[in-house]
Amino acid sequence: MHFTDLGIDNRLETQLAHQGITQPTDIQAHAVPTALAGHDIFAQSKTGSGKTLAFLLPAVQRVMKQKALSKRDPRVLIVAPTRELATQVFTQLRLLIAGTNIKALKILGGENFNDQIKALRNDPHFVVATPGRLADHLTQRSLQLSGLELLIFDEADRILDLGFTEQLKMINELANHRLRQTLLFSATLDHAQVDALSRNLLKKPKQIMLSAANEQHSDIKQSLYLADYLDHKEALLAHFVKQDDVGQCIIFTATRADTARLSELLNSKGLKAQALAGDLTQSKRLDIMDAFSRENFKVLITTDVASRGLDLLSVTHVINFDLPKHAEEYVHRIGRTGRAGFKGTAISLVGPKDWPSYKAIKSFLNDELEFHTVEGLTGKFKGLRDKKPQVQNKVNDKVKPKAKATPKRKAKPKKPQAPIKAPLNIDGDAPMRRRKKPEQE
Ligand code: AMP
Image: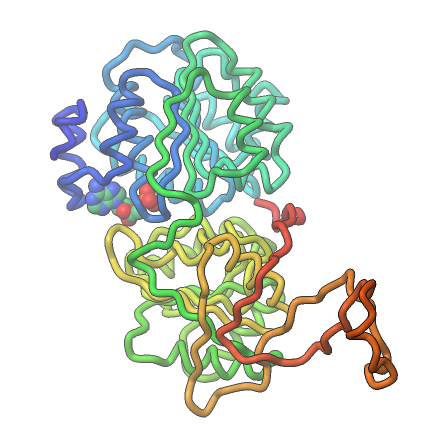
């Protein structure tokens, strides 16, 4: 199948061919004609499956071929949760519109507000933005949405998780006219809040659910390793990063402080590593991303700020130094590798603190997620037993020989918290908790 079979213009197809893209992916084959036909879309498909072009192609084609509703307002607005993801989308958009007279602007938090106002006066056709800064421009009326034709939310679930529900409502209301078309994409949309939001945002949407959020990614090999406390994790990390098959590697940690510490540690071992966290200035964040994408260094250590924004085919390994608190984030983190049909490896270190996350992820993926070991680096931690809260704690079993004969016995003695052997088969996982507010865009 060719892109022209989906209704895509020859010029765009040629532009894609220059990038080596000739065959539509599944999500593109489904979403492009649906979007071109003017339907609203609610689409879920795996990480790295080509979602960005699935919404950019019909958007660019619309701007190329259809008359604008307004000469001044942007025609297409794309909202992404993080600066990294917005930058990624913008880069792909720029490639698509190269050589046309279509104007596109990126509006991110952390950049000069007045410069953005000036750039907006240039009447861009496309605006790609993070929600916080976008809302600031809407409040200040430096950006109007009454002529908006196409509203696209990339990774809508993450936008909500970051606490931008009010901003989304504002965007929706300011661009609320009959002709607006809305597209919502992510790898993980089965999320109660997303359902509620989509009822307000979307009109009779076509659902394109190409894979369940918890479906295993066939191009990503996942392995988990039990780890004792920090020293053991660090020894395992250094071991994995040094392996010959590691091209570029992304390490995820729970805290910003750990990104800096691990970067120092790996550099001291002669491995070129850099830390990327949300507290860096925007230009520094972009510089680091740029250097990593040019393969100037091998290891990027980051938090969830980058769990959805990085699309680099040279990333062969993702290492979770700590597990994310929420299972969807695990799916997005490991999805930084195994993209566009390439194979990738995801390694997760699971210590005592990671245990609840491990259980949540295991339950979400409905998978056994067995543990592996590294020779010479096996630790003592073997997992935790489930707590059984209703059970009474009998202090001394020996004084109760008649317990068996008592018919009305209510509770069994509580089993001691003892290490057990992996692989574990622990049932009765707690329902997943809502995420705490994560690091902001
Ligand atoms: P995405 O899921 O949109 O982040 O895309 C993941 C990667 O797949 C990006 O590097 C895209 O450039 C690439 N890609 C997107 N569509 C195609 C396609 N039809 N054929 C080959 N590569 C693609």
